[in-house]
Length: 362
Ligand code: SF4
Image (tube, rainbow, N blue to C red; front, side):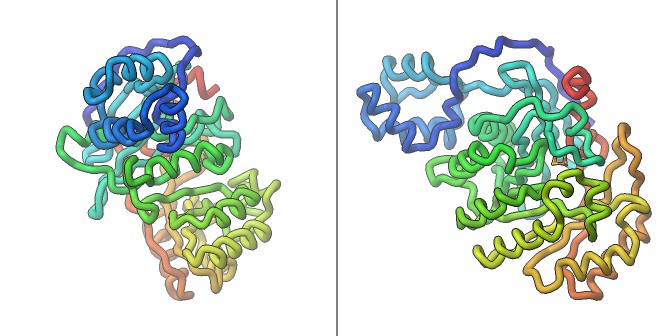
């Protein structure tokens, strides 16, 4: 395991807006307000997302006056790499520091079909899933769209060294994306834009713990983005135990919202189902789960949980994982067991940040 660590230093909370937060049209408006030609926006996007320069000074086909104006108004370096850990399977985990001293995690995962980046949408999280290290310190703040975009750009810059490309993005890192809905949508539009990072909608996945009103809103956006729900339980009782959000947004209502999404978009939904030893991993739970999702265009991802030191849950034995999978398959459910990645580098959501930044997660 390779571990590159840089010195930590708190910065002031004063910060110019990130240029990565701007849509192409917003940049055009800004240019017009500053007596510049709108076509410069496409040139700036090219410097940001195709050439991925590290400073406005490097945007050499812009006038010196415009470069200075951009520099006075926006920031380009919103994330500072504190740690970059490379696992034996090629997974790279980044710990980035934000301008106000908070830190966030981003993970690059290697798949046969390409390189996938898992981004964080909030500093901490207020959803309070009982199995999750990210929830230990609660929610500190939402990330701006540009801070989410910058995570993908940073990872792409790391891949540029070996001439590789980020081919997909999953919004499954720390935070509940639907609790930071507008910034998340803005992020999606920027990375999906032809002149932005140009990551196809079908290569982007958003995962929610189940904020029902936002599921309806997201369905009505009618984007071709993949949609996942962290279900983790076959019934109300177990879900409330694992995910307190189930008390506010109840399982039957959640299933109704998911059915609306599938009907409206024609797209299937993925269910994330973490297997927690003796809690939700018995064959009867698989049977109950199959009944719950019966008739729904869906796929189930079984996730053998990583041990989280601060929590009590234990791993499901291997033969039990296969028995669970088989019980679902026998009932016609599309199911896969998620391959574990980065096992030697604090791979569970929030573990790296929790370990390195104890003061933030208390
Ligand atoms: S699992 Fe996700 S939604 Fe639940 S507390 Fe952790 S970060 Fe938040």
